[in-house]
Length: 317
Ligand SMILES: NC(=O)c1ccc[n+]([C@@H]2O[C@H](COP(=O)([O-])OP(=O)(O)OC[C@H]3O[C@@H](n4cnc5c(N)ncnc54)[C@H](OP(=O)(O)O)[C@@H]3O)[C@@H](O)[C@H]2O)c1
Image (tube, rainbow, N blue to C red; front, side, top):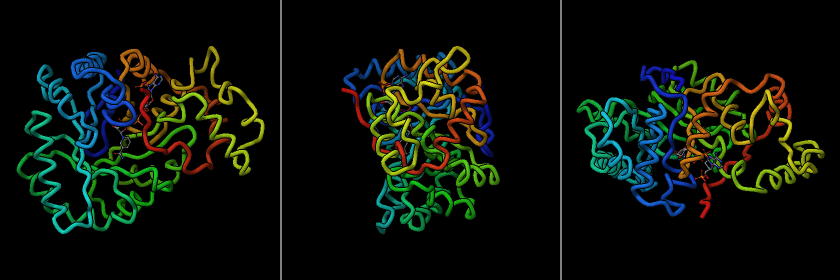
């Protein structure tokens, strides 16, 4: 497994990170048993993944807590979050209560990266008011590093993170980036790199590349608006040009490799409840960059798009 350093945290992390949310929630949303989900976490760690992302609202912290019982704690970097009404007067007390519940459910004494979860641009100013309280918890050793995650369905232009760069509160940021949603290249990565903020990628695949027909439907709408060429919408396999012996084996492999090798990206998260997908995704994320001509074509075709593929996660049940 390739490793990298997560920005100024200095944590050594795998370039592939297991996401316990999204449409699959480690299989909890797709009918897998608790024990099967625990085995999935163990399989990821056995294959070299040391970054695991979860959140109370995913309902997967107890799974990771059970999985951690068989793993030396310092072998994995655990990332979790608090999702609050940031405008409420007791948001700081609620965030601390959420942290304490996460510690209990994850059966650990400390969280490596603790994020404010899904902060919308209009909530940023209120959300950061909980930071003094969280910094006190950090001093007690309950949190190692502070992070923040975007709310992609309502923040297509990364406005929330852009407010955060100058404040420089956060050691880690989680943001949306994919083959059809590349505007973090100009709007976020210059800031994350300048402030050495560890950068986690979500929405690399999501629904658009994993549900049959979603990509074609999206390209049809974009062609109607003149945002992509008409021939793309007419193609049965519009991204077929990526699949060839020197390129990717399939679209999902291409999607993960595209993100993993983007300058500015530290960890590309993948969400799955399927052991075969898990193995394939780890393989994809450890392969070399896409051929330069394919990457350039993706940038030419889709580099100017905004807000594509950012829907809520759908479960394959
Ligand atoms: N605001 C936030 O903080 C926020 C928001 C969204 C996500 N996240 C984090 O980011 C992580 C990743 O996001 P995501 O869940 O959207 O993940 P993703 O990796 O972009 O997409 C996962 C979807 O693709 C499917 N899939 C994965 N590998 C596949 C393969 N090889 N072949 C076919 N289908 C495949 C999964 O279903 P299968 O189960 O069938 O594999 C799932 O439906 C989440 O788990 C979560 O930790 C955070």
